[in-house]
Amino acid sequence: MSFDAFIEAYTVTSLVMFPILVFIIILLIKDLGKYSKLSEKIDSIIKNLSEDLQDKGFKKNSNESVLKHISRYIARK
Image (cartoon, rainbow, N blue to C red; front, side):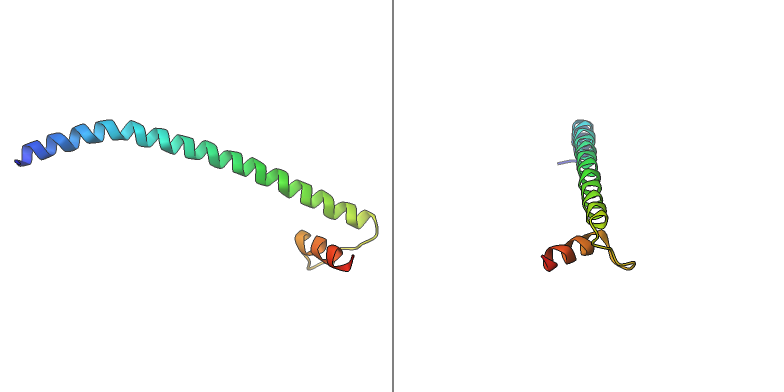
């Protein structure tokens, strides 16, 4: 196999594979965007739950995260 044939095969393969790789990357970016929106929704629900607990009198400590606050409430009940 000569070097010219190898270069030609590499060029043809790269011309075919580049659009496929771009398509896969676009699909991955769209999929990651869905997970980002879902993560934002979950975060807002958890924050709302913590605020509801505070409104009911179960106070959040100053150095405590939202999840720790909810976990402490669950453990207490």
